Image 1 (cartoon, rainbow, N blue to C red):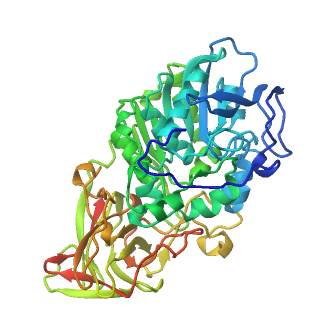
Image 2 (cartoon, rainbow, N blue to C red; image 1 turned 30 degrees about the vertical axis):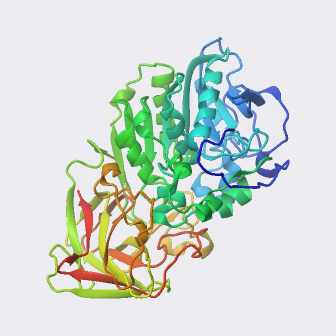
Image 3 (cartoon, rainbow, N blue to C red; image 1 turned 90 degrees about the vertical axis):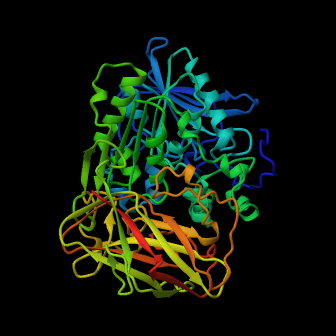
Length: 587
């Protein structure tokens, strides 16, 4: 692997692969045919057909590095007849959905036993379903993962070039019809942006379901503040394994907290994607939603679809049979060239969350996103701690202690009638700190009941759960996987510079993060803070509340406070030339 950057790339060691961990069985190239009716373990889904499995198939990429894949395919198909779905990640090709749900989710997200076969890779489609529909599933360990050679890389040019080479290798196999697609959630979705941007000739369609679009601005350095705790404390410790270490996001941020060529390489150029693309997203995911939106806006193909659904991503791919049926239909159209009316599928479908025990609205058909009829309205912050459509003329200030998690500034508006907010909000705040040269500012848009109680959204259906209300959920089950407080915004004030030419929307300012503009204590500065997109319905009497504070306000079970720089009080300036306000998307 050649270092293509103008600096030394820091790396960290990984735990070595260990038989039994994450389904790992040791390197053992072989083939076997699993018969129809076979079950991986008691209670799991029986196979619907015979499946030929090529375990640990070595694939050499352009620099001579060998990557290992498991290939699941129909055993009796004619030559050059089978399209392939490539599922790309470093998490272990035998670390399956069944085990991942047990490790990381409350109540298996309510996904009934028997929905999965145990052959599915973490965050990937189940071969039991797909081989029965005539596809091959390629589950690969990317560079440096488990027995795959080289040092592990996460996204960027190297990962993309490896993906390009593997796709072209797959397309040349005797059984393959020459058409390859990519599918999967999260990491498996993000990497699709990078690989598809290189335009491999045999990659004919992608389905990035929940894919972050910028690893600095949407994950590891959001707002300029390090945000890799979940990756460091869960993914690296419990899931990733390899023999040659991996490039380190944590150390890179410590050494280079501002954006450099390495960080820029972690943002794909989606305008170079020119093949059919089926994108999904959720309002509730703390990492992927804005990538899905940018993908929709920038992918350069007339054949693209966007579906924002109301549920957690793993439930959507594994627990919702209709979603799986749709995904197969999409690939049937573009990898098998079936005339199946896929093009009649609405181009944009959205979900609207209603919070609490209320059922969300699903598959709301719109002409585009952002929704064309959106009215972006300013709501000004007032000294009475309200949000008002009229700007206050008198100047005032409201303060909070930036070093106390419970200290926040709140501003509230109560809806007189039912209203939906769907789109990208933004906060414009005039702020100062008398005690320090910087401010880490965190904001949350909460939904309040008519009695003023904070409401939470359940990210999975209530069916198949042992509880029937938010209040009944035990404390140890209240994780970010299933509960959502509302959209958040984050910005370190010294990173407030904006490049408007690169902003995908006026309410989602692009911060280059290439310099720090420290603030003279006592100086008022203007901060534009993009807020994660939202789709929420408010009933008459319910309220929206803007919360401003010095700590991340969303549900975060792996986040820490050690990366925050705050000192003393933060003052929010209101009125007059300090027209601090929200911009909200009324539909």
